[in-house]
Image (tube, rainbow, N blue to C red; front, side, top):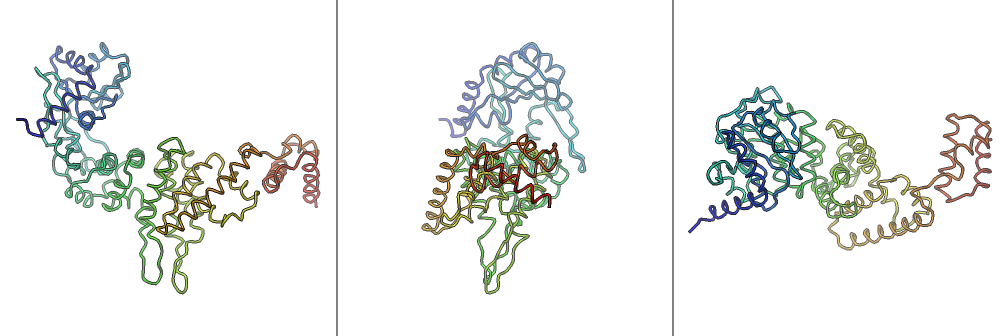
Length: 478
């Protein structure tokens, strides 16, 4: 009778071969050339989890130039840009393939990049991989496909545990980015990191500083866009990594004393992130901008906290400070200018709704809310609703109903006035003709004046807009 592990291996092998039958065809080419070929890493892990995709990773005894030669006879397209690191990539149909020569890497403790040495065996190659769940392989050039699992990764996969093949300190010291990858895989798979792994991160967290901001940026995005970002973010904070790569997050753990109570800002932030994710269907699915905005919306609070006489705490203008801090952090993490602008705008606007009260805003105030949000209006709806984390059910329901009414007013105004296309009643050419002036900054000032009036009072019509413009112009000349 087969053991549970043997059954799992049999299922994994079957899933791999069924999901990628073309792999056997490729393996035969390498075997004919006298080389080995094995599926390895993520595809093996994902096949066991029942979610094999169209990206396959292989490892081989062939050197990169030999791999390239074989691939060019088999694939539709081949890329050799990673050849210096032993990797040749190719594409056949919908399948993307990377084949890497067995590797045995050595690291300079002060360097960001490894010195790549080619290895002689798959056993050595698997031993240098980051986690046991990524150190499994399916050898395809043996008489029958052979499942290789030297570090019991299949058991760790079954238990939901993240563990390194060797000593975690050595693995993370060699490649500090693996500490970020640990948090990322935990978030993607909802796995629990082995205690020894967490201790290793805690002991050498400062080594992450030798990793480029671009590589940290990439791992952070994968973590934030995972199904369980709270899991990964908690690991970053508790291990000390966040204090280096995203210090604003652990700084939200503000001390709370018996005289000056306030909400736990750190826990509130993680809850807002989860609630924003639950509303992402309004944005068409997983959305990086809303997740970053939820994560960073309150980062201005530590710098603006003031104790109120008699008890309590205030955070006046934390949205203004937070928007500025958001720009600085995202810029340091090499995010694009567009994402920086969008996320900082949402952080700046996230409190705007609280001036709405129970519906006291005039139509002009609603128009301004729409105008300031611009293309981010639905994002702002999601963030504002997610920002309600009160445990008071009645209060939560009241806030939700109030925001429902605001959204209804927005929809009605947008339908009536097409506010998403709002413009002044006179354009720049009309302004110059009426005032008899040439293109200049004054035209822009006049345009903004009419736009503000349009926002406050709704459509003016050409006749009234002309009259208001001339009145404004006469005051400018005084």
